[in-house]
Image (cartoon, rainbow, N blue to C red; front, side):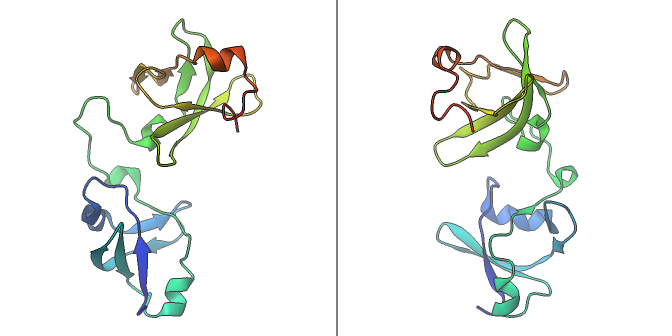
Amino acid sequence: MRGEVKLWTFTEDPLAVADYTPLETQDGKRQFEIDSLRPAGDHLVARFAGVADRNAAELLRNIDLYVARERLPDIDAEDTWYYADLVGLLAVSPDGEVLGTVLALHNFGAGDVIEIQPATGGKTLLLPFTMAVVPEVDIEGGRVVVSVPAEIIADPDREGSET
């Protein structure tokens, strides 16, 4: 109503998203300045500059908005990274064998999942992003160490192991 939209954030403090405006589409072609922001249950209600009515707000339905990486604060916590910093890293086994490249990280509600594009091609591999499976992240070295669970090695076509 009145040009307001529902906004789900992935910031530690949901209202902190206002500190990172403008928000932008993934391709960076459209930007949105937040005029107002308020909590509402499990999401926020935002009003963007230039979005004055319900029709204009409706055009924004299901659009993912992003904050440019350079506007995000540095992370001081150990074992904490921005997804964007992990995408593109080389995925290697504990003995150094190249497994592939980190394609994406996802969170479908039950925890973080790392998606790896195998070096040999084919379907991507989805693994839990836990210390047991990814015991080492070396941003400066450009790699993550991945211990692929034995059940996936034994049966790579197992449902749920690949997309």
